[in-house]
Image 1 (cartoon, rainbow, N blue to C red):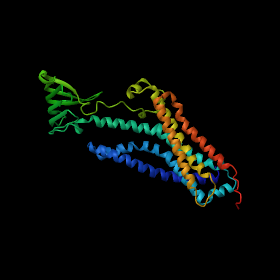
Image 2: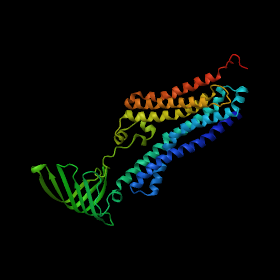
Image 3: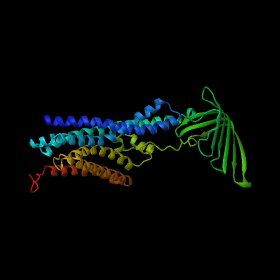
Image 4: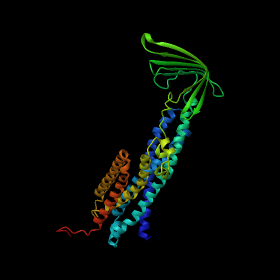
Length: 373
């Protein structure tokens, strides 16, 4: 690698590190604030909040890196132009195609970073985050079952616990389930235990009674049942039993490309949905070198001007927006029909064609205007 390549590459990497840090910090803080409010309202500790925000960081970085690559390239090229270094390089015989080599290397480097994140760190972090959310959701004794106070987990449900023993037993439990006005039930028991099951937490009532009131108007009937032991699914009562299956984004790319029955059952998705998610991951890193090349190639159009290249910066931003719009449109279309997954690679291909056209225009010899000096 020539010295000029190392100079441009070092400049871009320095700017890339700075802008990535700034953008990740801003984006991450915005996400962390909302997450902080939700967790603190649920009574979680600061350590849990810190763990959850840290697990969201890989996803934030993977989203921000292509934008940081574009900003670093556009700013670095603008700086080279303003300090006349770009003009000197071109005057020394370096064509736009030659100058684009270190920029392309930089873009590939940014794309590799995105690939490592989306194929490795992000699925691992999301899987860990899902497990931690399930653990916190199932810890209902400390979160929802509070002694000495009437609680209303959802509309139509009333819960009261006199006390919680040291071994975790719930003493003197009262539950009123009036979600269905035509079928209301009151459960009372001397003791109860919280047991974890595959479907979520289950409340085992011991030594109690169930009073069921059915019907409407004069046809209402009251039935009383005494029991030694009764299982009551509190997952639905505490909005936990309706949890959806695992997310496709929690699994590795190779497993999504070859989905097995266990994965499809856990996520409640189809094989086409799994492959769509995998191809989205494969296509995402391709946008990083495209973004970097757009930021560079667009700023070469128009030549040197003492007013700078801000007009070209505007067109570069517009080009990036168009590529991102095409990427979102392709993802939406493939979401409706998973057989169209090749469309996910089309935005990167069109972006590469745009960069090639811009470099071709920049490499064309410019004619002097008539009457110019």
